[in-house]
Length: 68
Image 1 (cartoon, rainbow, N blue to C red):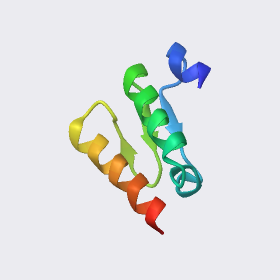
Image 2: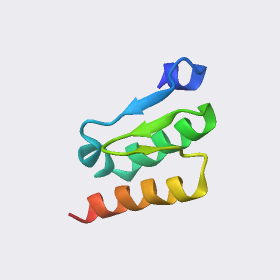
Image 3: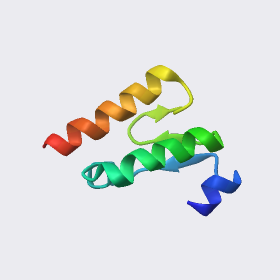
Image 4: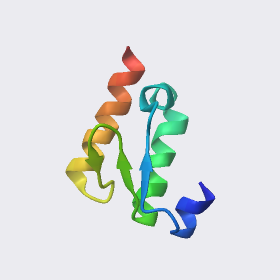
């Protein structure tokens, strides 16, 4: 998280995004930090949390994974 905040990381690759998204306290702060730092979020797709549509999709992915 420190590297994301400092701007040293350009993308965060989520191998186990479904596990991280089970707890909204972990998923949504990650999205917020990536948006502030300008880092992309990568899972099977690439998302820029600064863009409204991408942030919406990331939010839905987190919400859908918490329901399963």
